[in-house]
Length: 548
Ligand code: C2O
Ligand code: CU
Image (tube, rainbow, N blue to C red; front, side, top):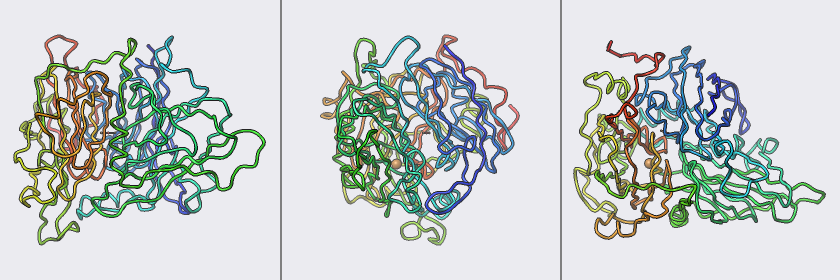
């Protein structure tokens, strides 16, 4: 077990993309931010200094943080923000995760530019379940806005409209040579024929699921969300925001230049979207004349839901002797959460959503509202009036969720801060049901504090009789983020063995800020190892915080 210590100084630096320069928020002036290299089982300390102008928090996406929600990071869920000028020491406790994860800002939209990779090597003295690759490369997919990111957020929150979409996607921070003023800095991956490369692919885009491929090369998928998979080959992958996918790339083609490319997979429910393509170049070494332009890969059509559902359905845990799985078999807590897009009335129809309404999103028809004191501290110190404990286990109204027409009254959600309380060690089965409200959308759902087994997925309304018969309880993938298909359902299982307060939300930031969020409080167990420890003494103060 090793300890590593990092210093993250959060500050604005000028950055030039797409022919113009603007200030962006970064860690240590780097974009993308620094990569953390750790081993399975390590504990890391990161000292976060906010030297920016705005409130800030940071989250270690996919790290389960056993009994340590205190430094998990989501603003107003587990902490109040780190004020400009302040500092917070965050502990990252790695236990079972192995592979690729990442970290990102978790305060408003700051994550648009504040993110980086986390590479988790096997425990010292152990190795990968596949032949050791000759080199490993993080591939961080992201996006770029010409507009100031605060303005994009204000549009979504204040005017209630759909906001702007990004102006470019990026690979390792670079838009690539199909965009103006970007050719020079296009990311280049130099390879040697005969060698194998482990690409650790992360989707940090704020709004978009992405198709990703490399011309003339199959990708062997070997892991996702820091858990190993039964290897399978594909000519392209689908990756949701928040998710990571590890693939092996064999440099087994004729020496040449090949594009790697990513573009949006979108169910363009809310209107326009960024339909551009980001590229990088895979460059074989040797003496040859490369094709110009480089060879381009096939990517599916932007709204190819079937391509996406099929890809998700092919993820299977390795589930071998060294990597056993632990799917809860006896369930004592059944939950059914509808995921909906909604409109909400505005005074004098003054908002810029449909018919002067504002856009919201909801889970079980409750659109989550951030409190002013974080839920974790409110829970720990028993501060009244911060949250309610009546999050519904089932939607308050039943209807044909994926029907084209539905009573309009179902469209208006309740706004509130309600949480769901789980007993320690309860075994949870949660069915997400996508709905067709406002035409619906895919939702990449992410859970903090746990990885979960994805035991089933399908299109249409969930059928309580038939669909459970199709569940994979043998080798389901262990994920922290998964795409719930538009007008479809998806079932996860996990054991609530991590006491604390844990956020669950759609990893499209616009849906998150519109209220597609839920919070679990997992109660303490009896033994001392099953209890939430007290907070660190440098917790960022809440502006409104009552003295406990
Ligand atoms: Cu990737 Cu709540 O975050
Ligand atoms: Cu969503």
